[in-house]
Length: 330
Image (cartoon, rainbow, N blue to C red; front, side):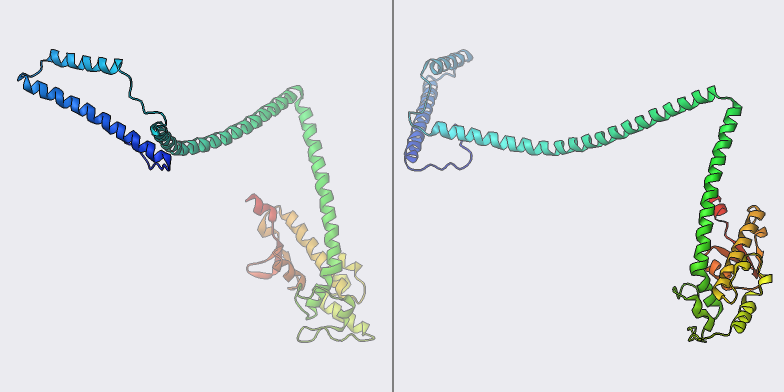
């Protein structure tokens, strides 16, 4: 009989039943052993080895005796059935645990493969939908082309270009208005302050144009405003820095007399206009887009610092706008 695997704990009456069952099994085992010894002894006493026929008859008789005899069953109340059932349950649990562990890795691999296949399926479906949409658009476009003549295509293209031109003209006009307002309200006073010996544009954000009449100290600080500034001297200073009105072009005609901020604003507007016109006339040719400037003004330095314009590498009196569109095309 196979040994019972694993510890089995029994208490009280079960100990007695277990002991009795073990004694019965040992007794039955001894009876079988004695029968085997008797058979061996009778074979030795006869002095002749059993023939194959005799061995077959013995085995047949033993089999018939076992088959016709009552089976060996444990007595009523024996714990042997419970022990056998417990051992079988333990074996099944162990086998199930081992099988579950072996299948966990396979299940994880199947899950990962399933997720990857689902992602691939979604991508394929999206690609298929995009291709169908593209094919439908191409078919519709082909049908429209077949129905339209070359003259109709030309008219539609011209109308589209005119619409785009109107759109960009409006955008340009709006930007120019915003630029003009920014120069007059904010940039002009800062440019005037730099020209008068004050801080560089951007270092002093809030500047009152009326305070510019007093000028700046050698340390770049505003002087105290006079109660009654010398208008004639102020006008001469403006003319010395920015030039008289008749030399500043049409833009400077809007300048108020004796107003440094307005003079600086007019100079910036005039310079921007010259640079843009020169760039358009050059048609993208860099060497032909330079503008001759009378001096290295605060307006010119501001455009260079802002990376909107660049000086000529060999002549600081020549200035041009950066051709952003050409840089993008390159």
